[in-house]
Amino acid sequence: MRIGLVLLAAAPLFAALPAQAQDSAVAATQISQGDFAAAESRLLSELRIHPGRPELLLNLAAVYAKTGRTGEARGLYTRVLGQDEVLMDLSVDRTAGSHALAQRGLRRLDTVQFTAR
Image 1 (cartoon, rainbow, N blue to C red):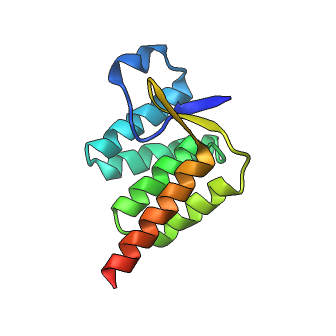
Image 2: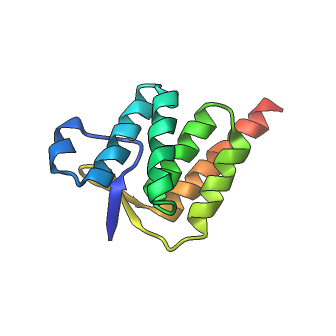
């Protein structure tokens, strides 16, 4: 099973995506454009409706990581690792497992914390 677009979104695909995946894709676009506040708001709104969706959790973790909230980001990555693994669409032709993405996010957090010391 594949779910959503994570972190990379293709605007021409919006019309073909179901509403939930489209909202995640819009948030991914906002993240890539540096509009973290708008992405966070959209993702939190979606998470109230779909609290366990890994693409929402991963995108929100990315927002938290980019805005210096590493503890919150770590918590979301860990939450994704506690769920069943899901194949995620990164772009039209790239996929990755939700666990691999969460682990990559945790490694980046560790690298940032290590270099900050």
